[in-house]
Length: 232
Image (cartoon, rainbow, N blue to C red; front, top):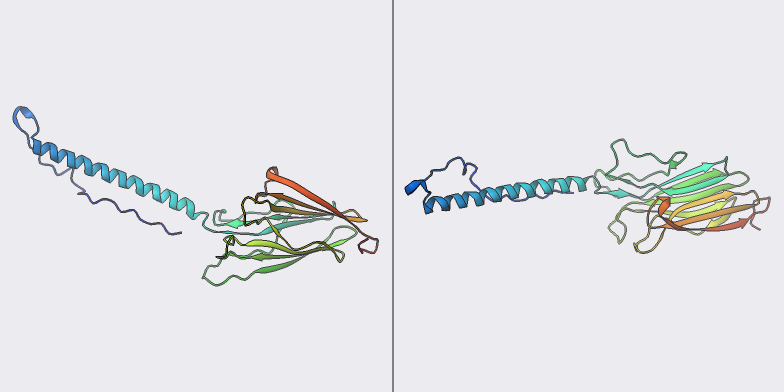
């Protein structure tokens, strides 16, 4: 983001130091002197206002510069003790601290896209995740698309291309924490639980947030599995 300078109204830097006072009778300033004083006051006011605008523009500019890009990402957990897999958003931005941000405790970051430093085109990045839940093994294919100039593509997006357990499809391709229409709910999390003879799939929705207090609702479905891993 480029900061545009604000032009300062021209003024003599020494207009209030280099003043030749003219006085009339009875120690009163002449009309000419009063006119000079008015002009000096006006110039001083313009200078102060211009400096104030310049300072304000720098505050706005530099604050905005800390968040002039954002890249969509994801984080996941594979917890064998609870037989649960979970996928959450994990966006990064120029507003993050220099050392970066860390995933939630127990989570790992899906292989991320890095911002371009030399103007080269950034390609989408596909990741394969394998999670041994318990009786069944989960396979997830996730692709992260880089920011683009397409409509609603400024921050890129995360798409879950496939999600399966022991070869059984659990869900069609869907996007994570992305919705072009801000009035529509976005999928904010995916959770899969292995219950030996069944797989529970939970998908939660909200307004592009990972704050669970703002989740609107969650849908749950159950897929019954045979002992050989096939779908009943």
